[in-house]
Length: 268
Image 1 (tube, one colour):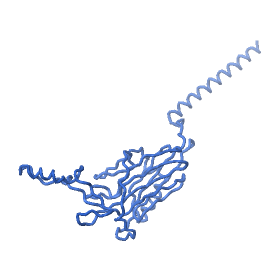
Image 2 (cartoon, rainbow, N blue to C red; image 1 turned 180 degrees about the vertical axis):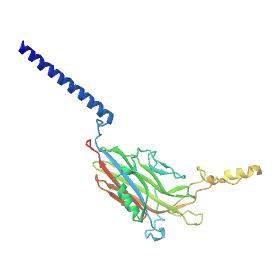
Image 3 (cartoon, helix red, strand yellow; image 1 turned 45 degrees about the vertical axis):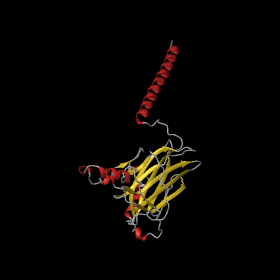
Image 4 (cartoon, rainbow, N blue to C red; image 1 turned 120 degrees about the vertical axis):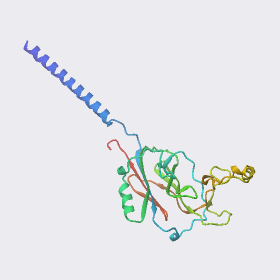
C-alpha cells in the first residue's frame, strides 16, 4: 500500500501547487487591473508639450517693421490649445497634464528668471501620432487684452502633422493698436466690416434709428462700437520637423515657442 500512498501524495501536492499558482495569478491579474498597469500603450504614442513666451522688448526697438505685411486670416477650427477670454479665463479642448509634469517646465522657468521673457502658456497632453496623421489646427489666443480691438494680442494656430516624421506648423501673429490714421485702411491693418456682429450699424440702420421716437434714442452700447484697428507687430509662420526628446525653439523678435515630444513606450 505504501507505493499507492506515495502516488496519492505526489498527485495531491501537484494539485495543491497548481491551485496556489492559479490563485496567485488571479490575484496578480486583479491587482494589475486595479492599478491600470495592464492597459496597453497605443503605437506611436507621445507626450506633446508647448510653451509660448513673449520676449520683453520695446516695440519701438524692433528693427523689422511688419505693419505693412498682408496677413492671411487664421484657419477656422473648433479645437483649442489655449485661448484666454477677456476675463482671463483660459479655455482648451485638450486633456492637459499638470504643468509640474512637463519636461519643458524647467526650461520655461529658467527663461522667465532671465528677465528677458514672460511665459504666456504652458500645455502638454498625450496623443497617438501615427504615420499619415493630419491634425486639426489648434487655436491660440494669448497675451495682453487689446480693449479697443476686443481681442488678445497674440492670435493664431498650431498644427501637428506626421508623414514619416512629426512636423509642427506654427502660425502666430502678434498685434498692437494701430496709430490713428485717416479713415482709409492701410495695409497690415484689420478692422471688422460693418453689418457684422459687434460692429457699428449700417447707414440704413442708422437712418431708421433717426426716425424712431426721441425716447428710443440712446447712446450706442460699447459692445456695438466698431473695434479699433490693429496692426501687425511680428509673427511666427514656420513649419519644423520634430525629433523626439529634443527641445525645439521657434522664435520671432517678440514671440518664442518651445516644443518637445517624448515617445511613450509600454515600459514608461
